Image (cartoon, rainbow, N blue to C red):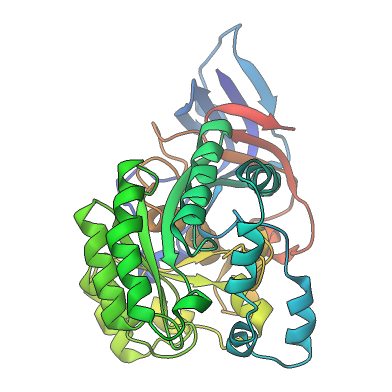
Length: 413
């Protein structure tokens, strides 16, 4: 057992059974000052004010959090952190003014990562990815979704998904896997794109399902990538094998991706820079979580999704990192909180809800993590001594985390 006592402020408590937070409720962040938190095995057993603490156990490890705050761990519902090498050369191309689409047409972008991944062994890919997992754990993330999509052929897509499975089996972080062979069209299918869609449907999806390698299926439904018709074909095939959809949508244009996502009950639609009244209306009548990838929009200098308009319309909103080698080479969710506040004008309370509870929903785990709730898994972090909740997004470049606890165990302190 672990007892954390004298907590300056315990953040993100919930006693209800909500699995997401919508609209104006996103600005409501429940906390307890001068608090305690009791962890038994891997679960949150109890919490409350120090004045109500009545507990003694000689075998209990005690942490004194005087002057410190306790937060639920971040949940990052959209990453591509299993990749080989890096793409900093393209960073220079971006600085010179080349667009994401122009770099892709030259064989860069996703195709560049696919080439590197093909040349990298499964063991080496695992070693590189494990370093990134350990990095985001230290930055406060306790649950992460990882996508394939840099294979673009059957063997390499399976290789990526097996690496994700190994990460699930060897790390304390919660991991969900996402099959994203529909990330880009390989060069050999440039003039026959539907043939690649057929390969995904007829060969890849059955193999992925046979090895039970993916929780979700995803498609990059956008201008210059997969059409709505191609997307629907892939999603229907995935659903037959129990893979719930998630969609890369409306990053580059009003592609219809949001509408397709809602039609097929996607767990989330992600990127969504190009979101208008029609898309908002569709989302309002759905169980799909709109998810903004603030790191990618920042790194690519893209238009920002209308976050305030979406919240004011009554939508829930999640923020994730899009950690990947080309358009968002960081999985730091504390930094994403800062982007949410500065670039999208979210209040700190809204940003925290958007990177904990709502991102937990966007990866299908808000029933077990994402808030300080009795019987949820004890995935939390303890800050260093800080003044206010607002200090978390305000100090955008500072390391404010003191102790990480995942699955009820102290990972670092």
